[in-house]
Length: 87
Image 1 (cartoon, rainbow, N blue to C red):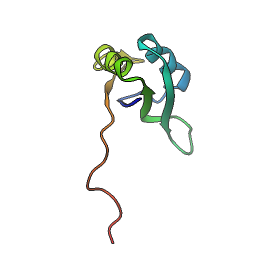
Image 2: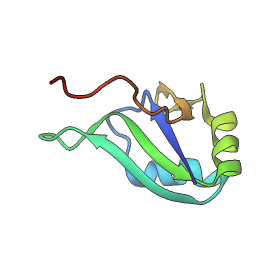
Image 3: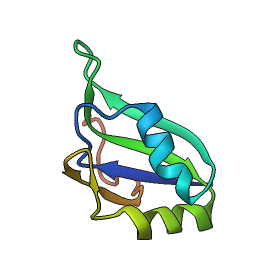
Image 4: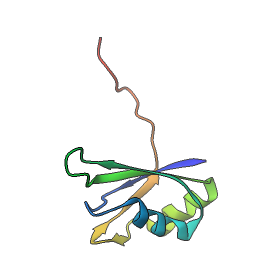
């Protein structure tokens, strides 16, 4: 299972619209959209889990493509390093 970072999403992006978009490349296991606490709109990014070969196909097919007026950035999630609470 691979986790994808999807950036540059429009505020109108929903789980259903992302499910439809990414399911063209395989089975979407989970979708986690970052949403504004007050408006409930998308903050511009999401995380999507797919099988490895399907995730690679989604990156190849969607990175740099237009979605609802925005140009998507799709890549494998990179773990944060060197960040955290200071003591």
